[in-house]
Image 1 (spheres, rainbow, N blue to C red):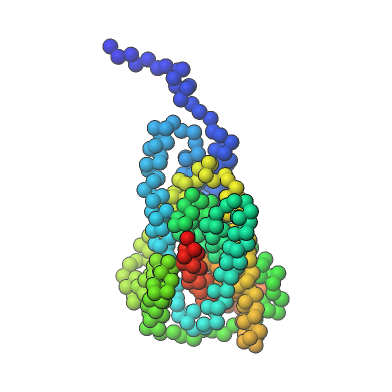
Image 2: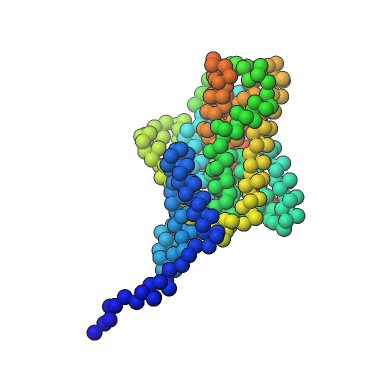
Length: 376
């Protein structure tokens, strides 16, 4: 007869305690949960990320941990292969209006100037990486955080520095969440009150055909001269072509929103599943956070300074506030710049100009990713 008695000694031997690193990661996951639930900070991303981060850092038995890993591994593969960022870029493409950019080409130069900050930090970070014996890939993924685009940073990290995927993604999305706080402070430091009160003219109308032609030319030039940028730019322009051709109108807005939300949640699970204490609590993560923040601040500042220069060139017709929208996290930078402008002067309406600069930041950021990938 089989003995079904419970051996409590065996049960106790199966218990284990979290390491110091596990405790730190559990605390971080708790903070992220709190921010997502009580402060509504990107709940679709942070909540699944924090829950899965908690799960993978609990001292579970091997057989249980294997079940958790199997459940999350297929979602992680979608992120580490670069598929999820491309889906995000496709979704963004269905929302942006290239006509805003074509109506005032000077806005493209303002948005593209933010990449100067990214590449400047890349060289500075590369110098310190050499001193500490870190890789040049680490400098690239830290610098690209200055574009303030989680999907873009995740894409580059997944392809050239996958072991730092969680650190890069969390850094990028964290700084993006801080945009409404940091963006006005940087703008205020670099501009005068009179500059911030400048009103801008309405943008001229651009036809649907012009937008589609621009999207096709952008895809073609990217494929010919910078093929490493083609997946991101191709996804962005493909989404925009569907928008302008009214094909995307056949989908309900609820479906589009649900699609974006599902991809965002999958990204959150993928990031959380890779945030192990052993791989996250390292000097490389600290390096990424420090230089990512420097890149973020410097890129925003350069955008504002470029807009100030453009204001001088055009004889006082450009409000430098729109320069802060040159980073890529559509549509947060443009809305933040617009709201800040209205705080300064209630009649100021800079949303369309800020969105044009924001769109330029997305395109130039994707080009920047392609340039970094040619190095490795």
